[in-house]
Image 1 (cartoon, rainbow, N blue to C red):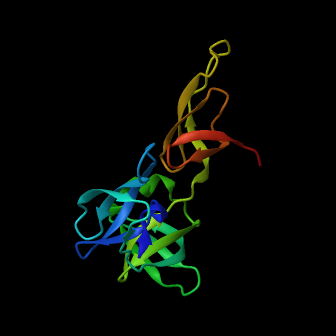
Image 2: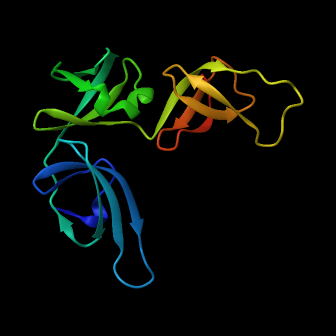
Length: 187
């Protein structure tokens, strides 16, 4: 059992006998009354979305899941391929189920896979990731308005708005929850 206040994005809960993965969580504390957690969950079996409001002190049933640190190997037409760093087990994750994560997966990097009943149900992406700028437009000197930005494309195909001084080949830190530029990374 898990309290409503302890539920975080990526938690796995059982509802109606089915496992659901929490994809959004918002904490709300009204002036009067009990604090609540508004959550949006996606069914692991059929992909349906369920929204719930849970008082933070109420307990709900959580699903027992395993986590494995795995190295991202490659993607083919249908699947992402991972290898467990300790057991060398191979995992295939259907791209259709995790399409939104494809821009954050980098060959050779380690990711935490959440597994329920032998099936990968989530790939945990770090909060911030360093990317190399693969495509960038140059700007003309004098076009610098305070806070001006331009779109760039990273080596994984992710499009991010960055300050005008960022050039192709530079490395940038990106917030993966908002797809926003954080800073330029040296070295």
